[in-house]
Length: 362
Image (cartoon, rainbow, N blue to C red; front, side):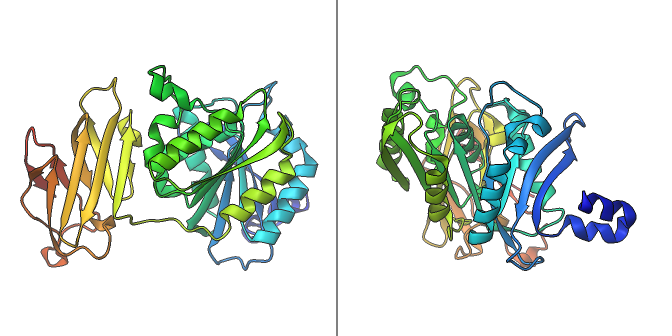
């Protein structure tokens, strides 16, 4: 209330109050339908404002019964607020807990609001883009993994508690999206921490064990911690201590030498320095694998993709000015992106698959 009074008494000077450390409930207008979207934010006081701050994005699960954000558990649990505030001070992270359309699990609108929360925070604070991590429990863990698989270049690390997953579905052919399992190759550069109780009767630990096995078989960095006990034996405090320890200090890999992008929608087909721009069959998963070979060649392998783009201004820095590109074994003409050509700062070169075998430059 004192913060509100300060803003009302001095709107110009009161803006500094909104940027000060502490606990906040913030709201912004959705760019989709103009509806108010709420989230809570904790800003640690021990870090000097104006410096870049790491961010922990806590993706909530589904709450029963569903309630408006201001009447729901995230706001009503004063104990959690004090606990998160203490952890934020100890580890030096901002903590954001969004409403994200409530129980809209897996919907595109929810993911859009998660991105909007980060954008709204950046209106007032400098986020360290190399130190954004995500955490989530139960269905919130599944939603976090799905969101991260759609936006892998956003995250430095992920931590989940008993995530609601079905890793066997993708292998048996019974896969029913949305689920992050078929997209795990996208997370090849994002370390993961998973905690699960062995005796969990609601979400069996075998799902997390199989998910971790599948991730490791593909070379992903996954740490699985199993605990003794039943469904609720993993206390929130235990998980929080474990996830803070895991994510602290992790930095995003912004310019990987190789990557995989799998997507069912074009909107989720961009990561790092590549972008899917055309899917051949919208009923099937599209996959692009890109590898930087040495300093002058990029190998591309595609499945179910009509066209793609390479974002030249985001390429690994050790690439030479002139590069050659091969798609599914077919070579292209050299792509020259020398600054002397006075090309646009956001230059992209669009490369088609071997069906058309041509290259366009802008």
